[in-house]
Image (cartoon, rainbow, N blue to C red; front, top):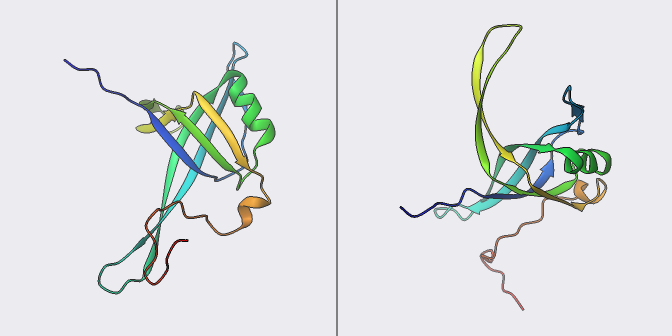
Length: 134
């Protein structure tokens, strides 16, 4: 059987201020949510529609500490790592659930908080109707 690759790569904006926490053994953990935006056009009327997606991620150790120290809400962040499903039970309410999150092994801060207040940059290679590339 051929092995499969479980690798996610996401470039987007950090949704909220990072809150660094520590395990009882002293290891750092940071749970974040990254917002991505995709602009697509409808075929029938050519109008642009913006689709927003949210991606949960977890960072550990020195990587978690570095990102928590330097990133702020709205910062453009690139993360890479495998997608994992985690099951949990809430000790207070007794409810259980499941979450899919990226176990981040690489991360880079792409832009500062001030830069990311600008409208989303489109990374699409498809030109808009009526425009041309030089």
